[in-house]
Length: 545
Image (cartoon, rainbow, N blue to C red; front, top):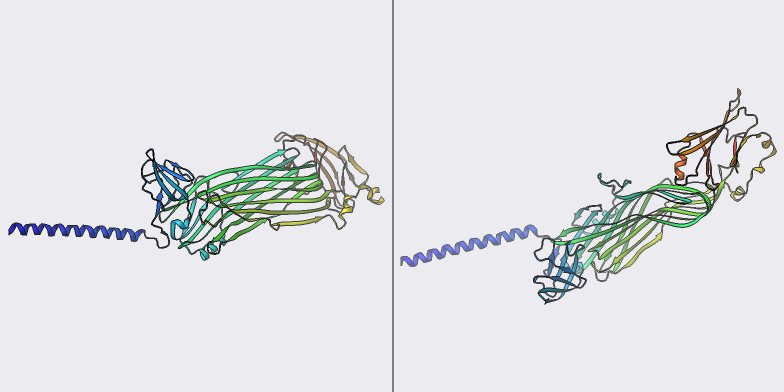
């Protein structure tokens, strides 16, 4: 009897221990599941995940199959999602269509899958700042139509990190200076960029979108010293940016990015011209897609600030444009996404030339000046990821309205201005302007009543190797008379490796009126006049030969 009671006692103790252990395990699992439960993002039961930390790694990933050296225990109908791994650097989403074992290897036959095969429900928003070495992001679980739209319309200040130095104020950029005689093109182009990914899935329906937000800055200066016709293009930067991975309910989502920056010029003119501009622009370009309607909504916003196109010329007939462009491709798993490009060009078209007609402001003719953005964008689908019905399609390709434009005319009768000659001056004017200085390039005439003399000073600036000659006539007035002076700076521009913009730095800035740049083969001269009396009735004048 005692032995029987003893056995009953130990059975009861064992049952109690098993019950306590079971309750503890169940309690842990319940607590653990509640902790990790994500009501906004629900993954389907047949989804299998591969990450760099997974025990079973594929040894070969091909377009239609994945090879393992041990049994991964996948079956037909499973969905495999891979993050960034050594065998799949861009990740992938695949449906399993079959499994076979060959020579000790396990071959998993696959076909492309989409996000609705992975998620039963998902509400995701991710903003990624593109960088040289890594990307930063902010993640929100949000309702697609409201918060995402507002976010796309908000304004951000974009700038590069402190440890970057590419010659511009932006995350990516380059300064440039190119010369192809007789053209020189210089400046800088840069961009900072964010990628915004939004996904909203509910029971097989998906609303999704990609938007690329950028801030660009550009400075460009083009000098053409002779008649020329050609298109120029220079690639400033091409870069495959690091892939970015973020996790949603255990699912790795991979974003890939490629960036290119170009500078371009198109010249078709007779004569010579100098044009330059500086601007900043903010853009948002992208798309939203709704699988219920099958419709794609374009996102396209461009704003710009600029003081406009600056120009100078001796003689031009034709047109010229120059600027920079940014090209960015963003995809999920390097398979589906957005391809956008933005080009902003400064343009000048018409006829103009320098004139000594005192009634005009140094130039005769008519020019149309503008700064114009041109955009291109398309949805790229190498392999469907968002939805099987979302295929490759153009979004926008257009030259937008000018960000800045100006029509300049020397006068209402600008055609007559172009034909004006020095001989058109009246006899009275001729009688009062007989004191002159002349060389093979120009002639300077001052009023006969001026008392003074011409001085010629030659200088050799050893700092930059530019030689200059100053021709000066100074007039000391009598009581009650207006003073006057005529200064002409002639710079030796025979060294064609020096950009034209460098020569203007040799000249005084205060009180100068530009007369112009003229070409005599390789002996170009740049002339400026310091003229207290230049625009007076009896002031000094310069005639270019």
